[in-house]
Image (cartoon, rainbow, N blue to C red; front, side, top):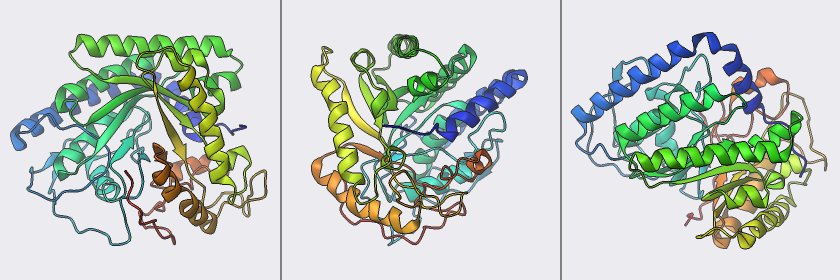
Length: 382
């Protein structure tokens, strides 16, 4: 499958490289915030073992105010009204809080709570992409505050340089120490790292070796800290290898019919075929128990910075085609028992600076937080 380079990674790499001079400051802010979250959690919520980031909803009680990323507090409403246009029809959602980009780190607890209110009406599972900007703590804090039934795959976004990995691992471990692991499904180390390394001229063997090394380090550290969590990785369906799969407890195979050049009408069939190809690595794995395969991303863009953009098969990036993808994929995948993460819940306008067309426009909600002119399927995900 031919994929374009994902903008979220390009901008993230650039931001990290440009911020080396302020890394110490960022780490200090994150550590202070984790301590503030811990203090808030201890003082306002007796159940400090909840930590999750999937979306499912309950409305009992109030845990009091929680800190924002700058330490401020605001009221928490746990009995928020449900939106009749939303249904818990998605197996999972691939989520990144707005502003969770180095070095600015503009994500805050108020915005994340607002996101979680809506996400909790769409799914019961989230996958994150990294731990910088206190992402894990913010999501787990919001879930605890709102008392919603969510589970989360936390993550470390793997870069070629070591400093980013070490920083994120520390931030992640602090979040686990604060919120516990009751609602954490696992830790994903890297997202399309091998795919990006190949684009940058590295070899598959070198890139795969580094992902495996970091998965093993994270697994060892978590065990030493007393946590029993699965550790896996994420890459494009066409980049997976038996060596990589055999070293993981789980694998996210990102499959995008848009980038693969499928028509929107044939997108479900195309995605299913690629998922079957990825499943072959699981079947052949010598790992005991075998790794668990998830479809790490699936979706369709509703627009583009390039007017009238179509993919290789002539299917447009449009709201109408987003609706077609929703209609053809969601209930089909739920019935088939496919474990997938819809990409994405929200548009990401910061990607518009990339000049890569469709990147900002994969959300069900637009940049203002309004649901696009779509109908959410009503079949409930398993």
